[in-house]
Length: 280
Image 1 (tube, rainbow, N blue to C red):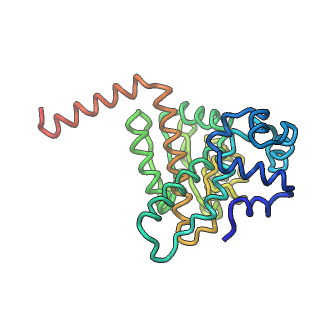
Image 2 (tube, one colour):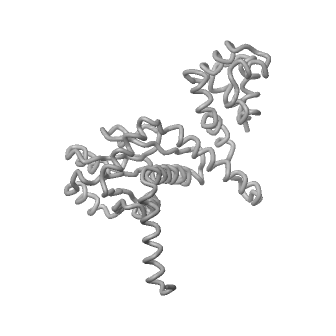
Image 3 (cartoon, helix red, strand yellow):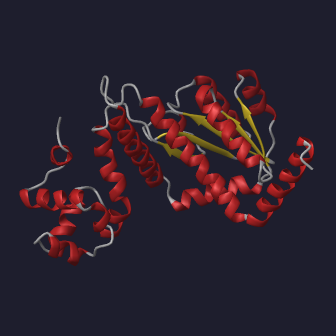
């Protein structure tokens, strides 16, 4: 199995000085994100110019871009080494899974620009009604966010039945924001509904994988989840971890935007629940 440095060397045109610098970055990634170019150059016996030249070879626009996305960049290579082996010991699997989930979340985070996130949240905050179109496990995770959003005053409904999905597309009005979730973005039924919603100018957010697909090309706001085809047994789990992070992010921002209302609703729910339970 190739090491991370070998994988990076294979993917980019790097000289020996670049590889020495990158090995230091790999070994000290938590420290590097707090260093200036001159500090990193001093620690690696190179120059600030050499540092900038190297990170540009890796595809970063500038040093700040490099520091922001470093963990995500390295996660791509760490994840490729995270294959679950036959009859692997429990401790090893426990450690690997934690690294896998951390890596997926870091990659998902870096796919979301603040500008795009602001547009997404504007659509979600402007309407009290949120409808989620999703199938199978995506629908199960959507039920999770539906529960959370209901707790802060957003009337959120998940549509998994294909007939209801189509009827929603034909009848929903602009007082609703629709979220469509599809890992591969190839389902013709969902593609047709997306076209209907776009034609009717319904606020639409699409969550799909970061790899090019038909759904991601639609004229809607897109949030990208992560997939890794190299995980033979875990590849479905990868997107679901990514999707949950996106939903948790949306929920957290909504709470932040109206923290007092969220607290009041939670207190009211607690009071009503206690009365129903008979504890008071």
